[in-house]
Length: 224
Ligand code: CTP
Image (cartoon, rainbow, N blue to C red; front, side, top):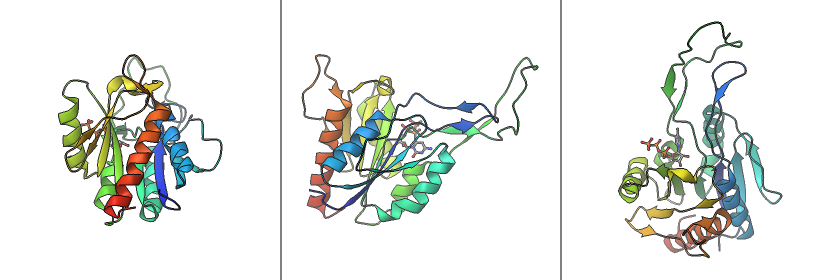
């Protein structure tokens, strides 16, 4: 399944410069995306991983390209998205970035610092709007546990995705996941695999389940 097909995976946080030494980041560890890259490699996919700052890369069998900021990741996706069959966008991309990073180091002599931020472009939505019929795009979402399913299906439609992995907010930086998969045809799927007592699943087990589902889905629909 998925032999020699190419999958592009993004993982980890972005760092957005405030000045020459400071940045705005988030708690993403990149472990979910790295686990997905390893599961895809083990399933025979040709894997490219776009990996954010401070994340431990997979040991072997995966082509890794590093990014730091949303702008770096946007450039990599502009170049590489058109050549992949599947994109799995697990990176925690900044929603806002400092409008004008200062050139040097902002001195602490002032009492208060106000940093103006601009909204970033939605990279996964941009890829989804440019996708060819054979391409399959999976996004991720962190949501308030309240109303998780409705919000997730709404986000999937808004971004034009084929599928969306929805997790409650506390998943970021955690060892385990407690999420489900929404599909463009309105299904909500919960992962199989050995669950922990609290109902969570290891990121590795979740990644294997996701890659198996993607492999089956793209071969059934002729996508990929
Ligand atoms: N994403 C992206 N580009 C951004 C922000 C997010 O491609 N600038 C992608 C993430 O990689 C992930 C999904 O969008 O696949 C996550 O979206 P999320 O941050 O949960 O939703 P938002 O678009 O930020 O919507 P909201 O803040 O309203 O929940």
